[in-house]
Length: 315
Image (tube, rainbow, N blue to C red):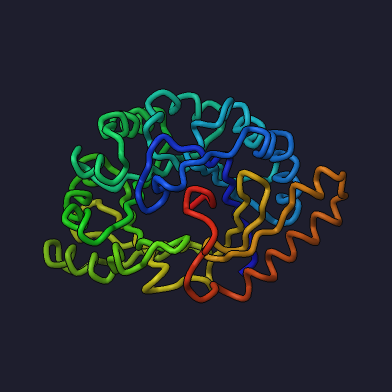
């Protein structure tokens, strides 16, 4: 499938330390000068729109830690051809930023949240600010950044006991909950924390009965269902048990200007260097085409992403 969706990482900095994404040994941050500038990002996105990109998602690290992030969003929202400009955040700074994001042109937010209890949240993230995240979600709803999707990485022995709690949370707050299978990177072992979405569904169906599938749009990597007699919409992203390479429509651009055809791939195409050397549109297009060609080959075999942690890629 041809890519029409660009996941744009703007920083590797994060104010949480989730053990499966940004473990202690990976704490070194890039320096500001190593990041793409706003002008470089805007230029690349304009070119990408010419080549078919219609959706740009802003990610990190934690994107709200990038200095003057609202200014970048205003630049991107003004690019003709972008139809959807969402952002994925851990929610810690969402209470502060939600109204500004809406005004700048963000269409909606996804919030990464793996536990609804203070002890579990602190265990996973290394920080005690669950309350800030929950307040941020409420402020985002009030600001109109909907539908809000809550991304939950289900981890064996850690938070699988909260699956039904998340569904109740969704029902109470009119949210979409998406359960995501843990995908190992940089040598982190799959079997340590991997919990299949087949098992997630079994837990849900024992409580709520059979789930009713909802039609999905082309390019979606999530499979959506609803629970009968409720308004709950659930999504399942299953990169391990049900790979979706044949319908994946996204490319990734790292904060340092590396184009990646696949989250699991070790291939990175340096697009910043030729940009700095004043390469023309044709030369940059060759690099985009190379990423697309590699993408069409499908996901590589494990181990996935041997030289990067998740926070360095953009999730």
